[in-house]
Image (cartoon, rainbow, N blue to C red; front, top):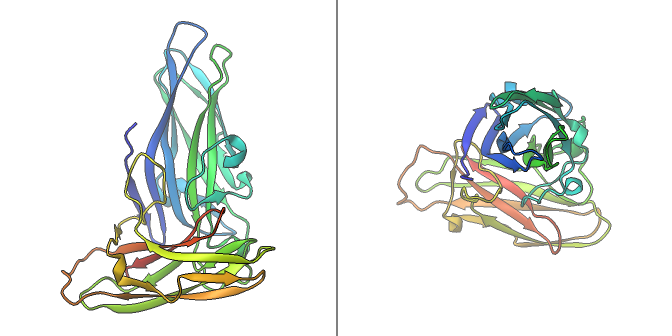
Length: 296
């Protein structure tokens, strides 16, 4: 399967469509059949907390379930916590705390032979600052209900990034950072600018964290951290400096990290906004990251 990216930007919100997912089913009869789900992966950014977010209204995105077989089939869709559904993890994203926050409408579709059906997606994250600045993964399974088919399910993974908030009144358990997005001026010759974020340790043990800037991953067959729509990946990581490359935080402690950029004066001007990531790494734990976007 070829991996493609389409980008849809809606103000402070963005949806990045990454791929289509499909699976062939082995039928009990001799007729061939299969399911195709489009998009099979996407990343929605800037999701508000405490509000109902319709992904179709946000970025014009709906799920399309295609029946490539020769007979009508009914398919059941279910949103779930990825690790409980056997879905592979995606770097930088943790399981959504509650899969009921991701609604599918309808969750059962009857699809004619060589036809398709549309399914809307609605995200409703509860109110609370502890849900801001989060990077989550939700899994969606598609299963045919007919007994004529071997029960093979299609499993897709969708990335959700909640709204960035600079000074949250409450932060989540474990290690987190706020804001999840730092804004700087556009890259121009001789630019000097800076920003900041805070890392929190709300876990039960002391954490030693390594901080490192890295470029947004390039498009590939692997589902990865998605770029912000309309932004180019900043490859000149030497321009970006952190005030510290290591933090040791006891339970309940926090540490501030400054990010500065120093662009050489002979750089060719560009009208495009750029983006770089700052990874927050710890041993035997998922990666946390902060986006730094140069678009002010």
